[in-house]
Image (cartoon, rainbow, N blue to C red; front, side, top):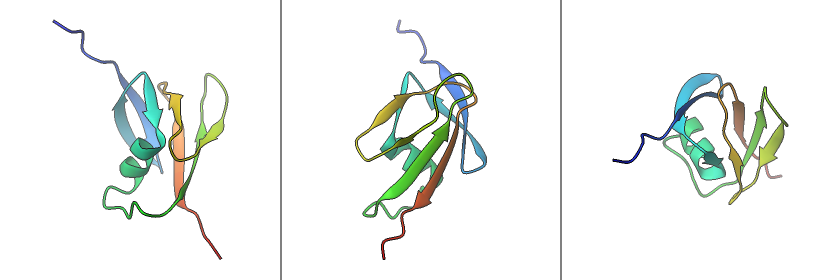
Amino acid sequence: AKPHPKLHDIVVNGKPRQVEGPLITYDQTVRLAYPEGPFDIIYTVAYTNPNGHDGTLAPDQKTPVHDGMEFRVRRTNRS
């Protein structure tokens, strides 16, 4: 029997969410923030990590996920 993946409690755009570790991807954060999409635009994903470094995620990037991380996902305004 495989061990159950650990669930991490995070916050995405102010809403509590649970995700399986050990990594979270740009696509996952976008879908947690905007389940209905659209998915054909670029989002800005910024995170704060209480136990480590703050940073950003670009498309195709991922980061280790930890309890208490906060993600802010917003549409990138293209002028």
